[in-house]
Length: 170
Image (cartoon, rainbow, N blue to C red; front, side):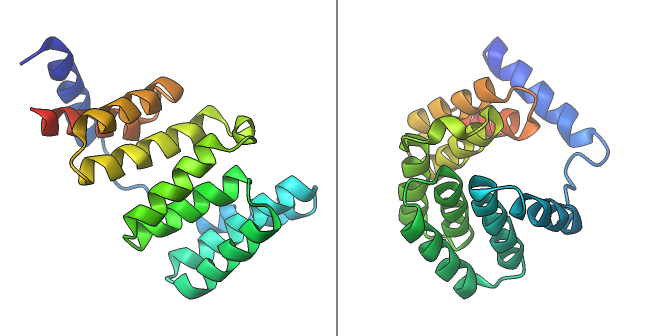
């Protein structure tokens, strides 16, 4: 077993035995408060706030409402990387992988993608890596996992995704 794979596996084991590391529950009330505050600040933030509101509805399985909202948001601003990313995440939740990949790649390649933070880009890379891994394209999935880890090295989800991908690659 290669030294790199061993170090990744040790990091994953450390993550798994760390108390609370596997039980992340988002605090919806904080998201809602942030979205309400952002709504008052301006157009770009207002659009982001709308997506935050919609993600809250999505968490409660309001998929039909969420899909309508994302479609309306993209009609108003088809290049919005936040809307495209959130819609990709929505399609992942629905297990519509072709739609998810299309939206995530569009977000990544949007002319306005530069407004995304490194952490947000890492999320896109990690989601694309997961899609490609499911499709059996392990090499390309590993490339996306590495990009995610480079963009956000402190996010343990990126390390865990890379470790699982490396294990899948053999």
